[in-house]
Length: 156
Length: 290
Ligand SMILES: Cc1cc2nc3c(=O)[nH]c(=O)nc-3n(C[C@H](O)[C@H](O)[C@H](O)COP(=O)(O)OP(=O)(O)OC[C@H]3O[C@@H](n4cnc5c(N)ncnc54)[C@H](O)[C@@H]3O)c2cc1C
Image 1 (cartoon, rainbow over the protein chains, first blue to last red):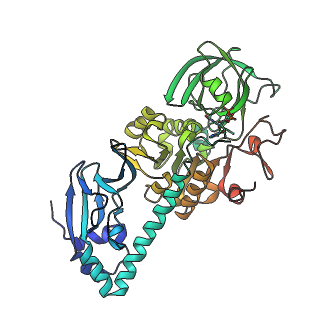
Image 2: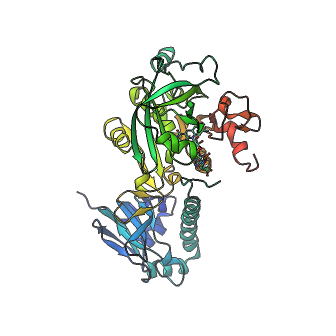
Image 3: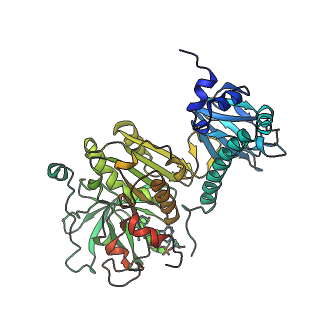
C-alpha cells in the first residue's frame, strides 16, 4: 500500500474541491489522518469542540442522549461529508454525541489551528465559511423535512 | 429500437370492468404483515380471470359495507395471477381491508390510471426515489426492471422510511441489492442507538447517487413534499423534468374521471394520473391552494 500525503488526498474530498492548492497545503498543516473502530466515540455533547472532521470512508452517527436512558440517532455522515460545525461557532461546544457505526477513516483538523489560519487570511476564512454554510443550509433543509414527519399519518 | 420496445413490453392492462362502477369479487388468499401498520393482501378473482395491469396503476378496493379506497397494485406484473395490494392501516377502510380474513372477499374495480411507463427508461439509467409506503406502488416497476435488467444502465433505488421498523419489503431490498445489480440505499428519519445504517432525509442521497443525469429516467413515489424536493434535487443534478415521473395520490372516489374528487386544476388525477411528469406537475405542486 502506498502512503499518500494529506496534500494529495485532501483535494479529492468534496469539501476541498475547487480550493487553491496553496490553501489546501496551508490547511493541511492543521490536519492528521485518524481511524475509528465501530462504536468508538468521536466526541460527546457539551465537550469543547476542538476538531473538525472530513470523512473519507465509513459512517458516523450523530446522536442525542435521551432522558429515559439510551440515545437516538438524528443524522449520519459518511464518505464525502464533513463532521462538526461547532468548532466554528462560539462557545465551541458539541451539541451532539458522535460515534462511528462502522470502521471509519477521517481527516481531523485541529480547530484552534484552523481558526487561526482563517482569521489570519480572510480569503481563506471566507472560503471555509462558505463551504460550511452550504453544508449547514442543506442539513437545515433536511432537518425541516424530517420535522414534518412526512411518513407519519396525517391527522384530518 | 422497435425490438427493444417489444422486448420490454408489459402485459396490456385490462380495461376496467364492463361497468367500471361495478366491482369484481376477489377472495383473500393470503395476508402478510409487512410492518407494524402495513399488510399485503394476495387476492384471486372469483370469476377466474386474472387482472392484468401496468406498473403504477391502482384499483378501487372495497371492504363490503365499510367503503372503497384507491390502492396501488404492488405485485409482479408478470407474476402468478394473484393480485397484490400493500395497505397501510390509517383509517376506517384500510383498517377493515388489512383485517379481512383469509377466504373472505373484497370488491375490486379497475385497474385505473396511468402507469410508470418504466419501459421508456430502457437504454438509460434509472433512479427510483421512494418514501414510506411509496415502495408499494413502485414495486411492480422495480420488478419489471429486475426482469429486464440487461436493458437498463445503472439502476439506483433510494428509499427513505420513518424508522428502521417501518422499512417495507426488507427481503426484496436485500435481494435487489445483492442479486439484481440494483444500487440500493436506505435511510431513515430517526433510529435507535443500535441502528448501523443511514439516518437522514431521502433527498440527501440524491447528490451522491451513481447515475448519469443526462440519460436518466426517475420514478418518484411518496408524500407530496418529499416528491417535490426529490424532483427539484434531481433537476438540480440535470435530469430533464419530463423524465422525472411522480405518482400523485389525492383523494379519489369514482376512479373514472367523473366525480371530480381528485381534481388538480385541469387534471383529473384518477385518469390523467396518478403518474405524471414533473414538467406538468411542477406549477401545480408549488401552489398550496390547489
Ligand atoms: C392513486 C392512489 C394510490 C394509493 N395507493 C395506496 C397503497 O398502495 N397503499 C396504501 O396503503 N395507501 C394507498 N393510497 C392511500 C389510500 O387510498 C388512503 O390511505 C385511504 O384512502 C385512506 O382511507 P381510510 O378510510 O382508511 O382512512 P380515512 O378515514 O380516509 O383517513 C384516516 C386518516 O388517514 C389519513 N390519510 C388518508 N390518506 C392518507 C395517505 N395517503 N397517507 C397518509 N395518511 C392518509 C387521513 O388524513 C386521516 O387522518 C393510495 C391513494 C391513491 C389516491
